[in-house]
Each structure stands twice: as C-alpha cells, then as structure tokens.
Length: 575
Image 1: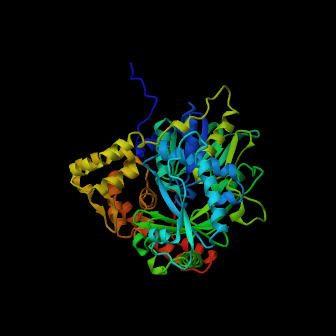
Image 2: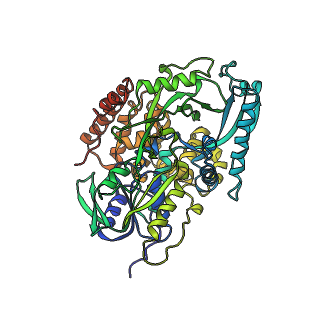
Image 3: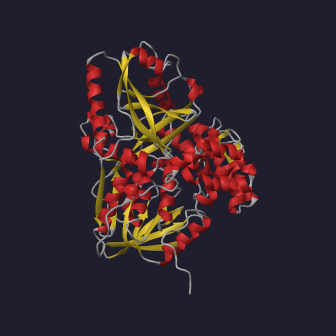
C-alpha cells in the first residue's frame, strides 16, 4: 500500500519542484491558473490554493521581475491620497499594513519613521496635522492595533536634532509619522514559495503565448518553457490575468481589452550610502508633481520617485540622466550639503500599472484596482498598489470562484503567514545565542532573520556542512555565499540575475552593482544547479552586459535614448 500524500508540499522551490509543477500543469485540468508572478499574481495563487482549489501559476520571467521588485519598498496607506479624499483606499491600505507587520510577514515588513517638514508656521501645521490624525485613526479601524506609534509634532529644534543634515533655513518645524517598508522582491518570492507549500503548481520562466478557447470561452493557455524550449498547453476552468503593466498585451491575445486600459508610469529611485547625510528619520517631501521619499534602507537611503509616462520596452524601463538630476535637485533643496551623482551607488526604474484616463496626468490617476470577467473563463485584475495586493488577489479569486461549480470557501489569507514568519519573534530573541554558536557578529544573524525568518535555520544547516559559505560576497559584504546557494536550491532562482537583482539586492546596493560578486555567485549557483563552465561564463557575461547597459542608459538625456542603450544588453532568451 502506498504512503498517503501530505496535503502540503515541501517548502523548497528548487529545480525539482519546478519540474514537478510543470508536469502537473501539463497533465491535469486546474480550477484556477494565474498568469503573472508579481505581487498580485503570487497573492492570487496563495488565495486560491488555500481555499482548497487546484491552482497553477506561471511567470514569463522571474518572480517579481517587473514592477513588484522596483517599488519604493513601502507598505503604506498613501498619506498623499488623503488630499485627494480617497479615504476608502487609505483606510484599506492601513489595515493591510497592520496585518503585514504583525501577522503575515513580521520578518520582512518593518516600521519606518518619517519626517514631514513644514515651511509655514501655523496653517500648514494644522492642515497636515489633521491629515495625520485621520491617518492614525484609520489605522485603528481594522479591529487590531496598527503596529506602529501615532504621529507627533516637532519644533524646528527637535527636527534638526533628529535630522542634522537638513538645511536649517528650509523649514520651520515638522511632524513625524510611521509607515512600514519591505524588501519587495524577497516578499514576492516568499509568497510564491508559500503558495507552492500549500499545493499550488508554480513555475517561473514559463511564458503564455496564447489562450485556448472553446467558442468564446477561455479554457486554458498555450505555454512555452523558456528554460527547455518545450511548448505545451495548460487547461484550467478559470484563468486569472495578473500581468500588471502587460495587462493590455495579455488581453490582446484573447482579442479583448477588458473595457479599460492600463497605463505605465515610470518611477525612478536612487540608492545613496547612509553616511552621505545624517538623519534618524526618513523624509517625505512635497514636489510640484507628487511627493519625494527619502527612505532608510539598511546601510543606504532610497530616494525617489519620478512619475512620468512610459511607452517603450516594459521589461527594462530605463532611468535617464534627467530623471537622476530631477531627484537630486529636489532632495538637495532641503539638505545643508548637496548630493552629487558621485554619491549615487545604485539606480533602478520601475513601472506602475495605472488604470488609464485618456488625458489625465499619471500622478493623478487612481490607484484603485479593477476586477472584471472580460470574457467567459478569464478574469483580469489590474491597477491597485503594492500594499493592497492581498485585497486585489482576494477580489480576483472571488470573481473566478463565482464562475466555478459548487460553493468555494471564502478567502483565508488574512490568517496565513508567509513561510518563515511563524516563530520569528522567538528566533529574534535568541539571535545573540545563535551568533555565539556560529562565531559571527550578531548583526549577521539579524540580517538573515530579517530576510528568511525562522527559515534561517536552513541556511545555518548549509553553513554547518560547508563553513566556507559564511564568507561574504566580494563587493557586497552584507550578503554571504550561503544565500546564493539557498536562492538556487530553495527559492526558485534559475539565473545569476535572479540572485543579484532580486533574491539579494546587490545590483542596486553595491558600488559596482555586483560586477565583482558575479563570478563568485555564478560559480556557487553552478555548483548547486549543475552548470558547466560555459554556462557559468555565459551567466556572468550576460550580467556584466546588463550592468554596463544600465550605467550607459543612465547617462542618456531622454527616454528614447536610454531605452535604446538599455536594450543593447541581451535578455535571457528562449532556447
């Protein structure tokens, strides 16, 4: 008699698990197939599988390789939406912020304190203070504490004590408030892995190239495994299109636009060393078009963002010299000592999927999301913001479930923690003992716990077997060799770029953007995945061309020039 199968799968998401997932996608009809492996797609896969449905998910590139890894890395209510009177969106996002901080991913989502400087002494303090009071009140409205302290008023002296590098003549005082931040790419890969753990069949580097139809009804997709070159069909009772800025492209394969259009808005961020200016707080600054965040990020600052239409290549949006100068100009307006381009160690650009109004400025477009059954068998979900991904996923699966036979249970994701989250606080309390056992500084263990939660034990097991994996990567001291191996064996990383750009953030945090780490990381991946030397060399060469093209594109004056230069680097292509 055969052994009974567990209702849950292994927590690993390595090559063997990918092969098994593709075999399952080819061989059975699914209840739900999710197309798109960003934050909404992975969230939808987890939502569906935890309702007891049979679920598949495919992503054309790597998990979070589009918008979801290139955000401001904030989990926030969107304080600027209060001014637009979008109270429902703000309240919804603040409730989700508390849930992510305290229940779903406390190891990945952390509180961050911001300073809002004031330029006018009385009216502005009353106006902004009223908005922040409302912000705090909304954060309590979800039936649980918000997980962060409430706002406070600061005098000019208190403000300069907290942020000594600000220009003392630029402000008359300020207010502080809390939001939260997250490593967006790590969160998405953890979400995909959690969906897999609960039984979803998930595979990256599988591109949808068409839809299967019976009459007008969508019954599946035509898929292409970009790793092996194999083409196959995936049958599903309902397909969910969660492709973000590619929504219109995906819908066009069915011959339907879904009754709305998704517009891409480019947002550029700079990464600057933390020692370039002194502040205990992040900053929220008003600009003539939107807002500018200065966000503490480990040993760095993230500064952004821009907000401009983008009509060029969606896979590799390029930052221009003008984008970088715009951000530097605005942040320098409040600093006592100006930043220059020489202070910029990293740059990244992402595209926001905004629901289009044909003539509106993109910064004024709603961040609301929409879910529609555009044709029978196909649900499309679009718009929204990173923080409210769980609500978007729930709404999409609700729509798909309504078309399935029989009663489908309601969403349970408000109670489901990501892998690594359960027991995190207990592990955090033991961090000094763990560091002592391994003979490393406590900061190293804190780094691992804040990236992997209790799954840090799996990395420590690797290090016990191979102590050399405790060595830091060249030019990226924050990361150790074990993290590269673990990314390949447990986190679905298939290429060097996946590790340096998303499983770690070396591509934006290191001064050389990962050039010196690339050969070492590729060799570690090659050992884990069975690459020959030619494959290792090719992965390194492709990554170095990417870095060179990005650097060169950031010297260009306009989007068209930057896009042309960025696309000179080869993409990871199908066999």
